[in-house]
Image 1 (cartoon, one colour):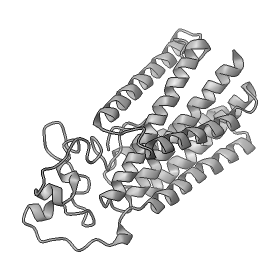
Image 2 (cartoon, helix red, strand yellow; image 1 turned 120 degrees about the vertical axis):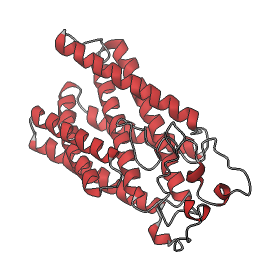
Image 3 (tube, one colour; image 1 turned 135 degrees about the horizontal axis):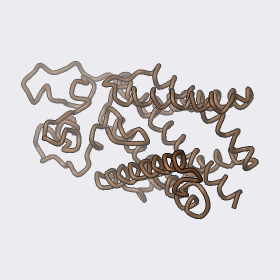
Image 4 (cartoon, helix red, strand yellow; image 1 turned 90 degrees about the vertical axis):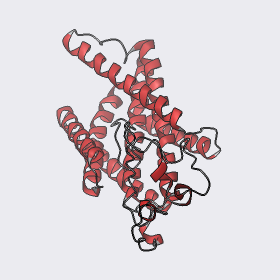
Length: 295
């Protein structure tokens, strides 16, 4: 899916998830092959499909048979994405985030260094998001620099609200567990409408945050007041809810990738997306706790 998460761009599920209102006719090549090939949300708005797995010889079916090309070699299970792959790579990326954050905390890195690391992490995230191929090095680099940034800001918030970082970690874990349970129980149903709503809400949230920062810089004070007082609490809760919605999209991405035979390298993108979402949730909860402790 391509427009997701704080970066709003992810290769692999361009424009939507497989199967979103895309039920192919029985007996067609699409129904017998890879559903990404017929996914109306996987192409550009001018109707040209852009199936990210079209050239994947390990996906089920694919366009080769439909277009008269010789069939690809049979898929090998070892070349397909699995849940274990996603768990392993997510553990690596999150582990690097935690280790880097711990190092930044222990070394008491200056705030300027932390924000510089955050800027580097953002650039690496954007570069990976717009690449047509997966780069584990970029993803791991993002995790390290994001961890340095989180370690610095966590220390800053800990001075404002003692114990806030640990509370934010526990809160993030609770949100993750709650969304996973709700998703598995089908309480949360991820479809194209859900995806469009979440992306729209996230873009609006990001734009309001940017305006708030610009007003604070050029006018002074706390900007629009989106990070202080009662309005800040409401805005923080909305940020956490948006992060939880992104988690549901991440779970759908993983489920679809495993179901439809995505290449094994896609597990790095799934880990990248989950890491970004959990970082989003953590920072929003951290701000929210700081506001609550100061009111």
